[in-house]
Image 1 (cartoon, rainbow over the protein chains, first blue to last red):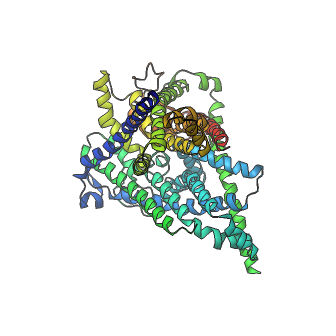
Image 2: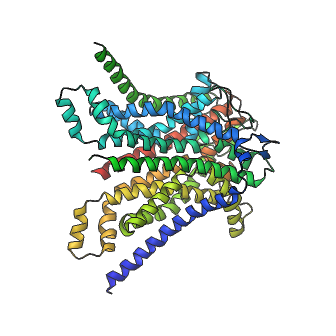
Image 3: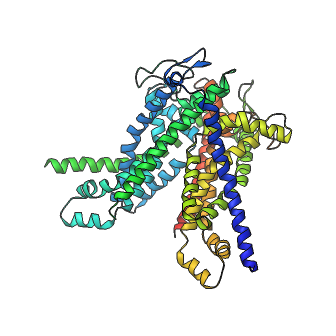
Length: 282
Length: 289
């Protein structure tokens, strides 16, 4: 072996070692949560309300709260995000306004989650009088999820071949008909993948819901969208830092449920992507 | 002509949805500014920006943002120093060295890391990483800047890896072919040709990583010890801008000076992340060319 070859061997081994240094902790973290949490998970833990100041019982209200928040977030952010992406790809001309929209998407994705929390609190909780409620929390999370949904939908729309549009337009279809029947159907898989991914992030977020929806301890289900709710990430924060003497197994089990929920959503997104990729026509 | 009308309505809502995104960014800024100005009516801007003490409930209260800003800077600098070499290194491995099946496994693992909620990592920091560091460094408490930096570095990795990898993959094939044609090894090509060509994209990755770290809230609130003082070293407890808002908002009275001061902290945070993302976007645009 000459010197260049040896150098390459050393360099590639180093890069491999660096990668291992990153990958190993990822697996360790997941195993650690599973090993310490799995023992406590039972049917009762998943379906009962917390008791004795969260020292016993289950986490059912927190699970329901998080699921409701995810659904609420989707209802607001999916239509708005897809329409905004359609605007950017199919309608916008290259002018100052369009550039502002694009720049805003970038900046929206960079705003820290706690700032969304402040914003949601002022706009939804105070100004619109929604109070600390599922509605206010969903709206806050929806705005936070918008950039990811817009970016994913934009990519999905852009990947549909240009000829589809040309053919449709040449047959006399209007612009909207073209989008509706010749572009959107083929972009839906990409849109869904991005949406599920961004919703899984929303499910795990704590900072935006701190002041907009989260209830410290509410051992019952919410009555309406104007009600407060417990949520899994906030619950984990509360029992691991705010309340003393919570059995550590309960924290681990809560963490495991949260991680499992988020992974499940990611898995759905991966399956969707694989399923539709097979059917792709181009 | 009902079709014309319904099409008109749909196209109108499409356009409005596009514009509404601009409105949101504007509104976030406007609300932060409005409530910050309420603070500055009674409390001098200079004392806020250059004050070295954050004592919100003493009498008279002091709202100097410097300790919090330094807390954020300390944690961010350390996190970036740790995660950039690791992240760029593994992006190089994933895009240029790893065989195809391994590549897929590694990429999925990085995606898994991206999806772990920050509050879970914060929890692990409290019960595991903090104590480990306390014993390892002989510290008074494991809840310090370093614990936060390590966890933040871990959390910023997916951003840095995926964007760096895009940048590396995006280097034109012809560059590689030309280098190979001249007899360069794969490593020489990667180190001297591909890496420099991808530098704009990698810089963008670093900037976006910085943005991610500066804005992260839960991890730093849970593990950095919540001490709003100018940090002596990264091994001491400190507090960031984000953790201050999250930790104190619940204890303030609406409309009080303290309440408005937290919005002013939010405005500082918004200004920082806005500029970082703006710069990152410039790099990305340069990289695409």
